[in-house]
Length: 366
Image (cartoon, rainbow, N blue to C red; front, side, top):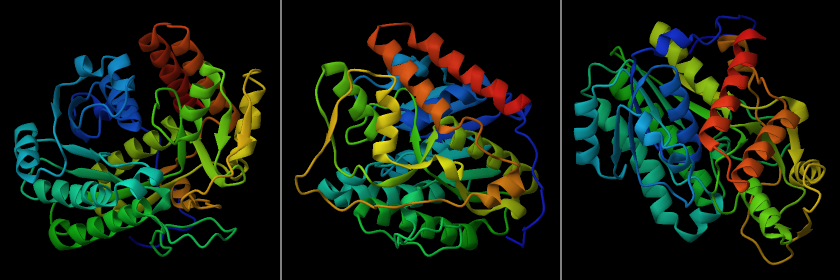
């Protein structure tokens, strides 16, 4: 990618681009994948989902009956190369979003081999499956902000910083970046298929029921009237609503389609500097909305997790005209509304649609 500083080359997201577009989406039964599947289907895309079964009970995928919204839906393992090749050949997609992953740091300590197989070889398998699919024009491989060699410094990480990872999850995402770059240079450089990677911050929002994530753990504790145990209350993270990076992925895919060679490479999608806060600050903010919430620090020995992590999203702001729409307070408000509604057994399909519509209204008309 050439020098870009000082040049605003992007434009707003074009909803009409997605009407009738054939999209292959891996990981569509997960938290981020579920929101992306919902959004793409609302935009009129023909979404083919490829993923394992939903990772939790309950799950956003089931609560919204997302299978009924998809053009096609296949439960399968990204590590199964031959089955993946068949699925891609049958779908003949134009745009591909790769979100299938083992997404948890702590789980990677318990299952390091599975994490590496899924996140590294799963990515390689998808790119291998796409090599002979002439219909594909844009591929967005989603990795993580934790792919950087985290030196616990104050400065935010830019896309050209060194990759690394203390834990198996972070290392697997760094390796997925390297594998993607190698495939792009070796096999897609002279084709019409443009490949990019996307690195987002700590995403929050309704519908995340994973273990060992702050907000799902918090709302489970709140609902049960139990004490929330925080492992690293002073850890600093780049918090953002899940719709923020998803909008970035959609905008990036559009640019890859329109001007592929100019937009390949890695992209950060992180929050404003003021929304990079400690775990305890996020919990205290939610405590004002949840009077019964109580928390304490967990002093038992814990696996290593990064203490400080910031992202520099200047490239996305300058070249895609992407910037966060909802500040952290709004993101926490929307997330709280979603979980309290779910606890009250409200119609979650309707509420989720309303939140997405509210976000669209601000994103496209600000």
